[in-house]
Image 1 (cartoon, helix red, strand yellow):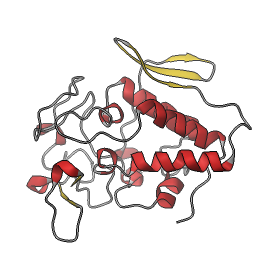
Image 2 (cartoon, helix red, strand yellow):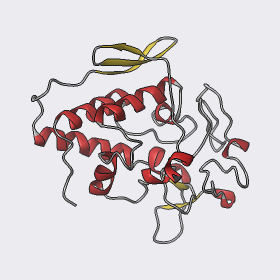
Image 3 (spheres, one colour):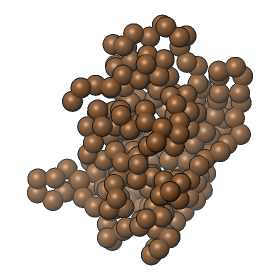
Image 4 (cartoon, helix red, strand yellow):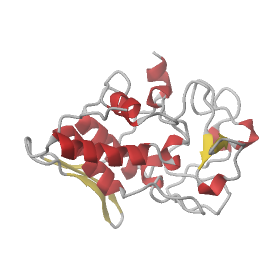
Amino acid sequence: MKFQKSITFISALCLVSGLTLAAENSTGPIADINPPAKGTVTEAQALEAFARIYEVASHPRCANCHVGEDNRPRWSGPSYAPFPPGQNWRYHGMNVNADDSRIGAETMPCSTCHQTTPDLDSAPHSPPHFGIDWQLAPVEFEWFGKSPNEICEQLKDPARNGGRDWMGLAEHLVMDAGHRGPVLWGWSPSGDREAAPFSLQQHVDDMTIWGVGGQPCPKD
């Protein structure tokens, strides 16, 4: 399957105790999973949590590499202006195309410019980097330009989210952060890039609130 070929499944050493899981770094936990008790989240609260999830998923730090079958990453957000007339984004410079592999293996690997290093700091206008190989998200995770309802339906669909339930989605966030991957980088992009809204911990919390509340989706 194309999905199986394109996705990189991320594993990490995590601390697990009951329903609590934490991503660790040298100074302590990066984020914890502590879901609310079953039956304590209303539909309205779950929808509020998803509204925040959407703010993160649609933010340039996430959406720019969550693109469709054209395999072309986007540049959007305040640090990438000016844009073509009538747009608030442009394609990645140098006509970059990550191809079907989503890592550029067929032409020029993303890692040619985006080095793999646990150090998230990069200078303004230089290629950013993080602790796993740079790549586009699987095409099934297309978020760029998508509505709240479209992203919500994708996130709750195991056929399009790597076979995960809501707990699996939260675990994915924490595991990726433990590898100092793109999830952690979204809130620490360095240079002059705008960070994703809220915080990693808030995002993990919102994922569990939305899950315990039944994963309702907004009406577009």
